[in-house]
Length: 278
Image (cartoon, rainbow, N blue to C red; front, side, top):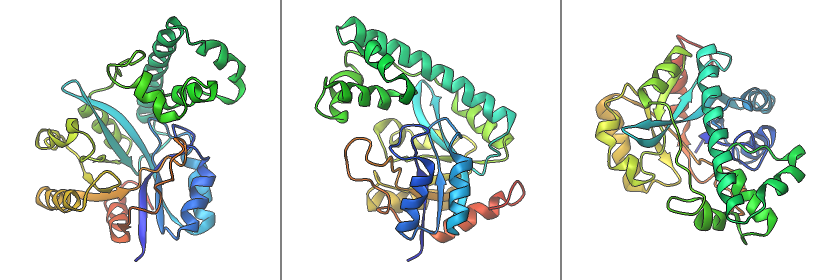
């Protein structure tokens, strides 16, 4: 079966590999088309597109945007956006500034508890760009504070832990509007991941989404059937992907596990045809 993976991450956000390596791994697995959807950044898209074109793979410019609905976080996949769109770049810059403020507060809490993260970070300044909790977790692991990256989340960074700081996020409706203004399509990401999204799906889909991520590593077969039926009922497009971050947590990469049918990629491209080409 020819399949695609429309949800991949690189080290431009919280993945382990460069955009080029992400593409190489996808090509080695025989994946027909991909989307690099890093968190709140399009920094790796151009390099990934160039590498994909060299491999003869289909490619969608994309980004995964963090948003808020009624005070709770959800993620929105933007496909086909013009990555130089001023409205898009302005939103992503605002998100980056929110992320940076959050990281500074997390580091401050760790420092106050006696963990010298600032000194350790200064020593690694040339090769360590702090943009998310994953980078803090990796730093704690490198420092020997925790035995694994995952343990950093469990002991320090997750909700109700010592260094947890809630996110400041834009409203989901504003994010979707910006994606549309940037000539892209807005998809609800991994609706089966976590109670916050799964339990509020009816309310969330009152927003003007263009599609829903049906296939995902966190979705059971029954969930995929359910989300596909919802998409059909609401006349939404379907996407899917592994949400692979590489081996950043020391786990086996998930790329290749989720096989989204190639026809879904073509349907998305068709819907984007009035804005851009695939």
